[in-house]
Length: 307
Length: 156
Ligand SMILES: Cc1cc2nc3c(=O)[nH]c(=O)nc-3n(C[C@H](O)[C@H](O)[C@H](O)COP(=O)(O)OP(=O)(O)OC[C@H]3O[C@@H](n4cnc5c(N)ncnc54)[C@H](O)[C@@H]3O)c2cc1C
Ligand code: FES
Ligand code: FES
Picture 1: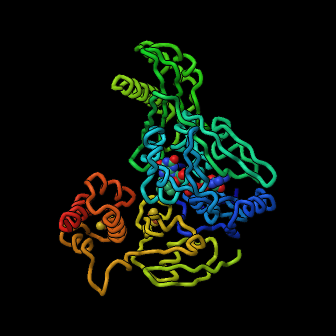
Picture 2: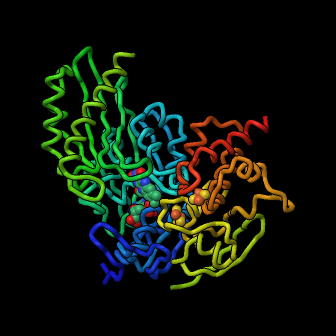
Picture 3: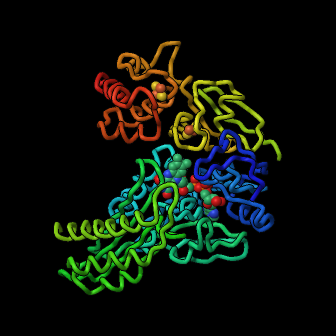
């Protein structure tokens, strides 16, 4: 990072966001191959830009100072949503707003739909991408918990290699991902959730448009009163968005009784590692996480009852 | 830092400009093209006062690189009225007292136009969702929402 000349008074930032103080060369490759060639040559001197809604703010605040910015926005081959018998594939430059408008997302991936609708404003959703939301690796990224419960997979490409990364292995730390410096994500694949399962997304924010204080996505599949499949993921409660495997293992093959619900809430509170920041305290986040787990599970149970 | 030549249309007129990559679309609109209707305030995506239409969709111009609009079409508040006559939305803002200081007005007018073009008969909820990305610090949102709903009603 730079010698930051901006004044930082605790959590009151008197940052100047009127200019981008970083000087960089701009590249707008027309094909994926051209983009991968550039990354191969420029390595960590380059940053990819999609919607820019995270990167431009980061450059204004000198949190990121790339020498080269490689735009993906002229690469038509990254602009697609395809639907087949296994699930949905979404290319790297598809706008959040376009994904939210897709019928299949609303019908088969309700937790993702709700997360998208809850994000920022229409303007920002017209600009930002889901791949950008994930690659930015904010602990509070709203599409992360839904993609975690749907077991999404990312395709990462470099000039000489292609690999699939399960989303659970993608986040390493705030702002850090499993990507190598010459790799970019070309696609997110989201397999259909099991037949007759229910899923939902909830979040608590300070004001409507702000980043989440705590977010959660839950998927359940009941067999009678027994929980056959259960997936729980939370955001903004640890250095990365996370699946709470312990809670899932505990609930599996059990009924959702009041007692079991209490135990699950305690497991979740233990597994998460929230911090105190401008938005909330650690204690508050833990308490809210407990409430959200309960609310999300009850919502799924209600849907099951109403079936 | 290499300058880039970009060609784009703004309010129906084609322009060719050379820009440095670290300049925003907002800067291009205000400082190069001298169109001051589009306001600058937070310049980090929060307030929405810099909203313009980019290829027909509302975006926050403070978070768009100017180089990225090569080949695009932009509409600012200056591009809405025809032959010096205010648009129905602009008239409705006056009738409803939907502005006090007026600093947020261009952004609300732009979003209102976009919404009614897309959806001539929006529900109150749809108007609220559309306006969600623009902040007003003095008038309050009710008269703004009423003004837009009123235009839709009168068009029927
Ligand atoms: C006013 C405002 C409100 C916001 N509200 C929310 C909110 O409610 N919830 C939320 O989750 N987020 C929110 N955000 C954050 C942001 O809009 C989202 O994270 C958005 O999805 C980022 O996508 P983008 O395409 O703009 O990313 P960019 O800024 O283009 O990229 C983000 C990062 O990912 C990297 N990257 C992008 N694409 C790739 C790729 N294909 N391969 C490898 N790396 C890549 C970039 O190098 C960069 O580091 C908000 C932002 C603003 C400005
Ligand atoms: S100036 Fe662009 S959103 Fe505030
Ligand atoms: S009229 Fe003053 S900010 Fe809206």
